[in-house]
Image (cartoon, rainbow, N blue to C red; front, side):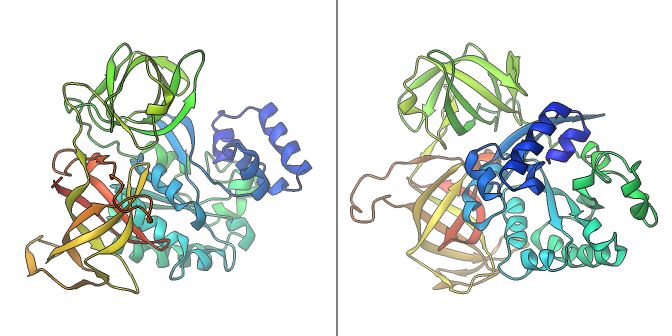
Length: 421
């Protein structure tokens, strides 16, 4: 992504040179482009993305916010946080011999990431097959990777018409914004299609419900200037304006929106779908947490400790039974929970009931279940469980999607049907 930002003029030569010097001094010169988005010392030392980084770019017809999410298994919760704020996906796969296979084999991160982003509502995807220069721009290798990914993408729920593949060589900038360089000559022997920027420019923005109640899940909290507190996230319904007073849920606190920033520019308002930073006053930062939701006092989001959901079980080894302990992911929040009741298995196409009160759920099954939040302290199960803000999918799609993980593995995904308590 760092090289793409450079090609589009978002990174100047001075900054590029500074990243190159810094990465070389650390003995990681091949990571110099990644430094543009991997900004923390630990990320740079380890050579991996750990948190979600935001950057904006412009194409001829689009203004795009890039959420650079981690790919390492250790940081899947952060990847989920980033994917939950996305409209489209850009999957970058490594064409080097053995590297693609390592990510795509059973249990590999490429498979899990594709399942996660589709489960979180992302329906259009660009697959950039990178590092083709390392295999001498071999068309057969490119075709092999596309041929392996295409059926899995369809199986994961991506429609072929909303799936695009593109060959790139990011280190040299080949086919990112142009193919005018000497390095691109080998690619031009067999490829004459669009560049990556062309495909980004063709992405279709989803329709937004700006008349819906305001919902702003917080993905990050930081100290602003003076008494201001900064919060970042995506508007998941309605409109927010500077000068408004908003409720913070869960809790009984409120805050005043002093200013709003989009792409580091001050704006008077932001509508559903916008990734923005809001600076708040009249609030103690202790009341602002990642996963909290800002909304208007007259249209607050429901809070839940028990709810029903329709979920699809992924490719799991151990079946799910009533009482199974899980981690529940909703936007940037993850909390302990249990699948407390297996209500029915469902037909995946029609949603009609196949069997009431099943004993177990195995891989590939669609089911209606009841999910109950658990105490975060296993030794104190009677400690009051804090509810989380969410809504039925039928009311707000963005606020009604969930993921379920167990033992570091994503075992299912689904939508909220009804809040029970």
